[in-house]
Amino acid sequence: MKNGALIFGIIFSAVGLGITGVSAYFAREDLKKLDKYVEKSHIVIEDTQKLEVECDAGTFNVHHTTETKSYVDYKVLETYEVKIDSGEVKLKRKWQYWFMPFFGANSTSVDLYLADKDYDMYLELNAGKMNLDEGFTFNSLTIDVSAGEFKSKGDLTVNNDAKFKISAGELKINGNTTVAKKAELKVSAGDLVCDYLTADEVYTGISAGDIKCKVESDKITFKISAGDLVMDIVGELEDYKTTIKKSAGSCNIGNNASGSKNLDGKISAGKATINFVSE
Image 1 (tube, rainbow, N blue to C red):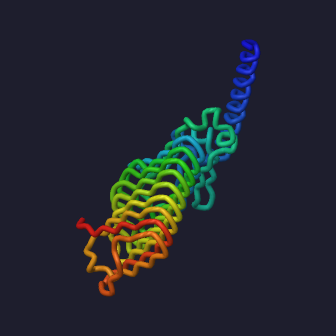
Image 2: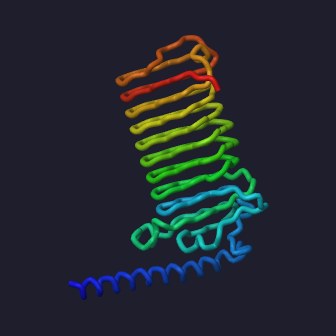
Image 3: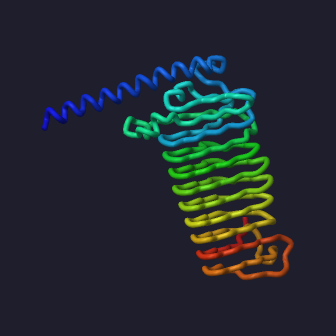
C-alpha cells in the first residue's frame, strides 16, 4: 500500500509539473503576441473603451491607480488569456486551470489596475471571488455572477446603464452607486445587496433568492416570481403613484392613485417589504 501511494504521489506530482510547464510555455508565447503592450513588466491597456473579465476560479481584484495608463501584471498570462483588439480588452481564464482546479487554480490571484477613464465594463464571475476594491466611474457597467462571491467596496458612478445579475452565490455593492440612466437588479438565486442606489430608473426582478437594497429614483419597478425583496425607498409614500399586483405572496403596501413618481410591482409568489426612509 505504501509503495502504491508513493507511486501515485510521484505520478500526480509529475502531471502537475507537466501542466505547470506547459502553462509557462504558453504564457511566454502569449507574452510575445502582446509584446507591444508590455511596459515595466505590465501589460498596458491603452486606447481602450471596453473591458471584459471572466473569472472561473481564484480571486480577481480591480484596483484604482493614479497613473495615466491602466495595466495588469503580465503574470496574468499564467492563468488568463488576454486579448487586445480594436479598443477592446478581454481577460478569460485558461481552460487548463478551470478544468483541473486541484492544481492550484482556486488559490491564484490576479490584479487589474484602472486609471481614470470611463470604460464600458463587463465583469463575469462563474466561481471564486471578484472584488472592486475602490470607487470607480464607468461609462456602462454589467456585473454577472453565476456562482461565487462578488464585492464592490467603494462608490460607483455609471454614466449610462448598469446591470447587476446573479444566478447563484453572493453579489454585494457597498457605498453609493449612482447610475445616470437605468439600473437593473436581477436574481435567479442567491443574494444581492446594494447599500444605496440612485438612478433615473430602477428595475428589480427576482426568480428566486433575495434582494436587499436602498434606492432613490422617480421610477421604480419590481417583479417577484419567488423569493424576498426588501427595499428602502428614499422619500414618502405620498410621493409615489403605486400599482401593486399580486397572484400570491404578500406586499406591505397597497395601491395609491396619486403621486408624481411611479412605483409598480408584480408578485407571483414571495414577499415584498417596502419601506420609505429619509436619506
